Length: 137
Picture 1: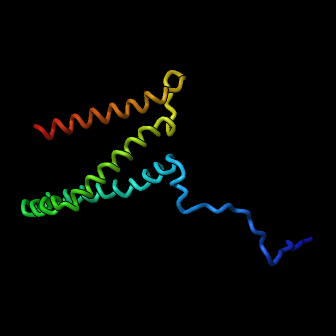
Picture 2: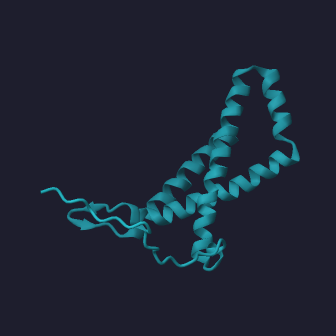
Picture 3: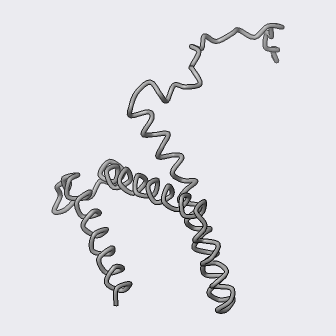
């Protein structure tokens, strides 16, 4: 026996609370979350900038000089400074979230979160030191 389901012409309305467009301004944690998400745009800009630099270097000395002249414009410098700040925010928030994102175990015990975040910061300092040393040389 095949029974047809009973359909109604009207679908029931679900109760949904209205959320303000500016919900992310209500708490500092929400604001930081939005800034972190926005930082992805500036990370992408740094990737594009680096690819443009590589293309200019492979294009020869004149191409590289033109790129440097363009990169020295105040607007580009300002964009890169803002991008640097957002990339630092992105890095710091990621390093602070890393202990929640990964559960590292050593000899059957979970490694404390401060060790995971601390090792990330230590690696960051070491790599930055090596890069600085390479630039200064």
